[in-house]
Length: 77
Image 1 (cartoon, helix red, strand yellow):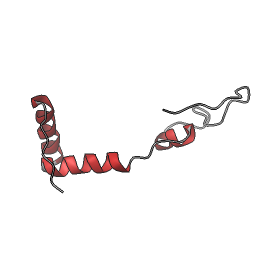
Image 2 (image 1 turned 90 degrees about the horizontal axis):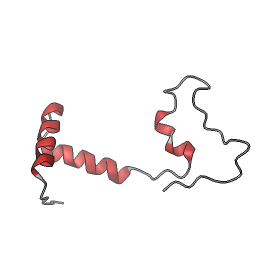
Image 3 (image 1 turned 180 degrees about the vertical axis):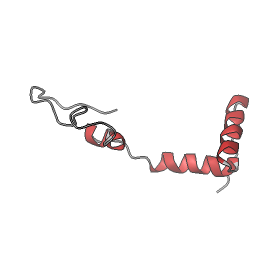
């Protein structure tokens, strides 16, 4: 599939710079960014939302358990 985009000059410059820094073409960079966004799944709960950072904290620093006093669900938008 081919897509033509009209981008603001600053966005185009940022894409050029990022693609050059990564040693890839702008087309490859845009394809990677779009693919990543399409594959991204909306988190259904806090456990899923914070899954990417699990393990970055020492034991006890960040809890994914529900507070016992809390009797309502958190809504993720």
